[in-house]
Image 1: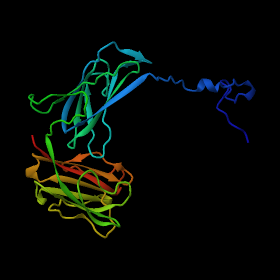
Image 2: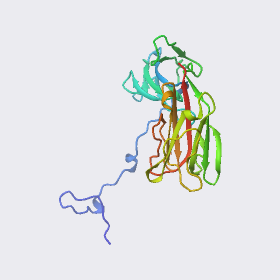
Image 3: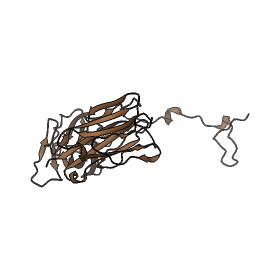
Image 4: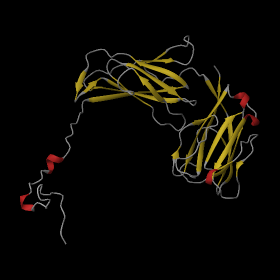
Length: 302
């Protein structure tokens, strides 16, 4: 049986005889990698409450240097994942890159969700240089101009609280497990164990009454329950039907003072994006069962 080759004669379209082919220099085909071992890094993680902020990094003293086309020192701003907090959104920057600043420093505008978020700032500099002190000025942009400006130089930052979380009880009916009650602190349910949630209810434990929070469940084949409240069970018991999504909101008269933010963890779709104030929280994959949820009921106190 003939063996086909991709080395074709340019004029006839016939395979070039093996004896006429040029030997392949395998070493020349390997990618060239330049190892830079003289860069050191330091990192600072900031914990920031909900809101819109400007993070300004001061200009670094001393001459910059260049290594393999990279100007150092350099600063990288990132939003690391967190099970207990939300994800910060970097929406603007003074430099050409949204998440990188050079030795001249600069400003990044960050929006953090209701639960707050972590922001990680990493400094990259030559290994033979003394450590560059990281000076970060944090300014709140969505409050009056009299808001205090904070400078973070050595310790993790916690801005003055502008929200307060309301303790909430969550009842879950879980397959093969039955009813389980939780206080909504981070995730409730069984993440990673693929035990489907078949029903749930919510009840504030302080400040609000049971009728002040409303919720609904989504099920297979586009099923949807009405909005319910007063800690009533939403979903089914004993029918083997999974909850495949949910939504939560406050009663209409409370929506100017309170917010609710929530995420779901699904069998195959994983963790959803954060949703809030009645938005449907559903999986990427249709009819994917819910196995855990994270709900935060938040009062705006300033």
